[in-house]
Image (cartoon, rainbow, N blue to C red; front, side, top):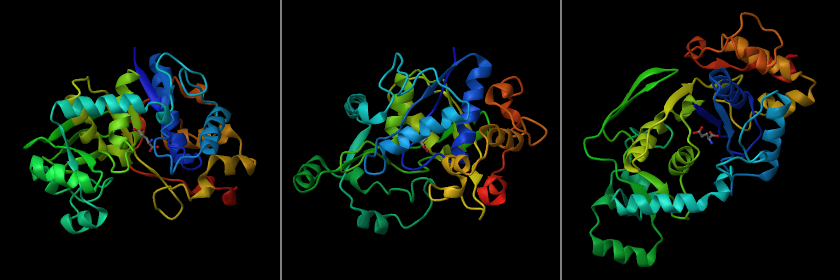
Length: 318
Ligand code: GLU
């Protein structure tokens, strides 16, 4: 049985980009008779707000989406909020450390800026880390630990490139060491997204990861983590981004595309779903629909591989 999920970070309101991802992930599971999970990625407490988490769930329900497992409905893999799953991340870090897959990194932000001037890293994570701390001896590590709490990095295996088939974008290949050794726990103790998402997807039995394409280049890192933890790798599908009116990536600050704002302006939920379904080529005309009316016509191969401009649905254009 397939298991998919939508995993928002409650650091801002739900916008049209999130809705498209949630809708397609929901349709993928509803069409295949799978289970749809809602997971709240509130790991970074400095950015997450409970009010946003509440609003995201409300907005999704208002749009006509539902979930079989989630923070408010529970389920066999509860809790469904990352802030309550820290013990799992700690266990995974211990396991990776036991296998020798991690090393402490004492570099400061300033060090990283000078060490890694070549911007050839993964776009989601900045320049490649040169591996300066990977080469420290045990005694150097011990000495530096006295002065500074280190971050933990995953050591990208030498000579390793990562290839996978993306259900939306086709064959993908990432060159050897493309992003360098990446952080799995920050120096302030906060577990990195890359680790938490893999640990949760394993624990929740996720078979299908459908998410926005800005996370495409996180996938090789996550595949290496699955391998290091000895677990099965799910299928991945990365959906092109929804862009704001200025052609830039929709961000939390583009309030115009926030569902709450469209709702307040009197836009019906079926209109939002219909517009996104039309732009995703699931229906032929821009007409109001309920998510459940789209289940039969859902086909990931129809979704364009190019970004989608969100202009026409802003309240100003109604
Ligand atoms: N929490 C991430 C976000 O809101 C999504 C993580 C994922 O789907 O893997 O961008």
